[in-house]
Image 1 (spheres, rainbow, N blue to C red):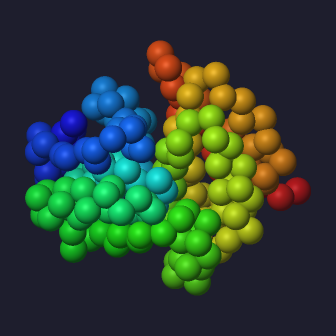
Image 2: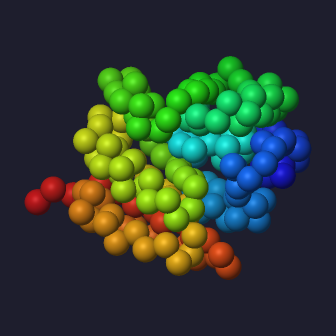
Length: 186
């Protein structure tokens, strides 16, 4: 696992030990950031369920102004901090060691994020609660791009119920990226 592009290009990243995190492969990460390339420079990036921090670090390397990385596994937090230090991007990052719903509440009143990425454990239905929390929060607006990484066969048919609309879906062999935004009010 490595940083694909930007100021930390080709730098290797550590992954947390064990099966609790599932790093996004370099190929999928490259595809994702190619789709986001015009949105990254100068953005505020929120990485929920950060794991190794690779997605937030990639965003910073490619020019994001700030990244907030949220993870509650202590072993993963240590890896995120090591990776941020190694890539010399720690000064642009905030690492929050807590569960995602608590982090969303704590971030309230501290500005809007341009991009929110979430890669929760597959097939656990965490997305529903996170989306409900985000839709009621002031940390996103109608311009915020939210990307959900999930197993290919996971139905996310409650997106609209949570107040969002699907903008784009990118399917891979075993997983997918869903790009969503707040629904426009009529």
